[in-house]
Image (tube, rainbow, N blue to C red):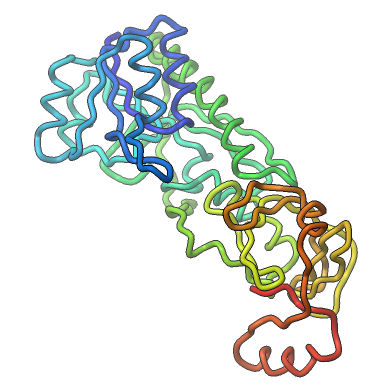
Length: 329
């Protein structure tokens, strides 16, 4: 079956590799244009393009999908099926309708939960216990097509989005292979999504990064691991903005949100429910990620106060003279 693969980042690579490993006839690969990367702005190919070129497959990198150019590229290789994995572009109806077997998407959630651009990160931020991968027959909506095959995995209590990303990427390749086998045998049974159960996983941005210490310890912990490694949760420590990359919940307690309860060999911060989280790994500006203990050995944490608004601010400002230093937000 002549197949075109559409994908861009690391997440999509195992799926493309699985197509090659299974002997699938990959007649073309669509991926996003090369982009500048790093301090020097070196033009860098997407990971999917690198694999495609290594395997000797034609690569197409249209900048637009709706001006007819992409459709003509697709027609030039005459696929019977299109596989889409984290491509990063919305496909117009004329492309969705062109292949004989349509377009199948591999989505990193248990649809209809977490439709959208960042399902992995939001599954962690939202404190989900379970997530997974769903293959879907694409339609014109945003992740709204009929579901084909779903497989689930548990999310570890301290697992970061980066770690979950790698596990779901591998699971995605398994789901893709299973879906293609069922397609060949005529055994696929599409299931319509229940729109009443859908949730949305919007694109991430650095605006999400600042930690709100008035949230519960579990909510703060989930945000730290859900935004790790990018865009990373951030807070001010000793007047310096740092990225918080890894944390755990503790049973120790503080007296107010943002209070640094310990800053010796361990960094413990109280949250809105006064339960403490321990920061295990952080990253200072222009520095490599490091254990919090190493950071504390080389950086003095000065006394200071956290900025709040409204009535809470008045109360905490008054109390700050009588309590340990709060973690700056």
